[in-house]
Image (tube, rainbow, N blue to C red; front, top):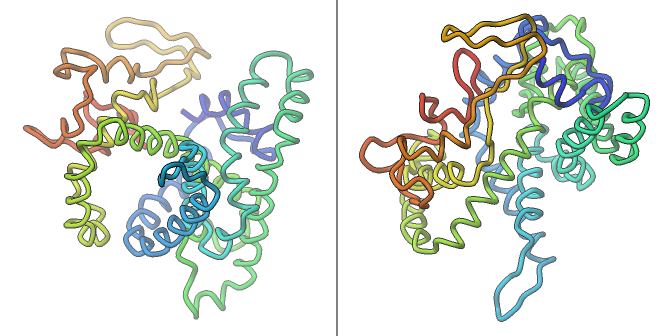
Length: 339
């Protein structure tokens, strides 16, 4: 997985010199534990902060929209991207930094710049493609802005460590990652910043796509609006406390993702040594393997009327959740490493 990410994203060039190891585990998994053990359980306590960030950014978007016949006309993807980038910054850095338009703009562009420049660099000799990628992304301006801000914030928090311990540490993702590394200063701010770029900002693209498709499907299938609104009104308080519940909304998002192909392949891996599957296929060193998620999600053997949108498909019979990992739902990968 790490080898695939290194080849796909070219982080040495696109992420301020991040020399990522190809083999998982060589750098340790402290940052993964920070997310699973600290960041995720704290989400219910961050809801109010996230609501403020989303509401504020949504209000700004509406002010810039045209009103035709009493209705707002929005550029859906662009609007969702800005709102999610703002919410993501709030969760990662806290409200103060997330209120800086420069940071939000950089967060919005970062992952897209990395994807585009990574593809350009992989297309030919680096002596040619690296300068082209640099030009297309304005010398990786978004990455540089985020990297510099993260490094400066890490250094500031380290210098105030004793004060923060007495007054209470910031409750954001950056602090979770800082806490996952040794307190002796042996880990550079740049090293931590590199991890933060990968952990927090690449998901902006996937979440933006998922949300955009779900909203588009809601506009297309307006009959779902009323039951979804009723469920949210009745179950939101409990959802805020436990991040559980809202099965109809969960099913609607899962069905939207199933049909729209937010991820047509998942579980990407690159063979570092020759590999043989138990059934016989051989994978030479350097080759990629992946799960054909898009085809699985439209398989008539798994889904009745697979091309038909059924928003509550996963809430009936044997219900399942968007975050599940099963033999039929492999969006998050499979095996020991899932996301």
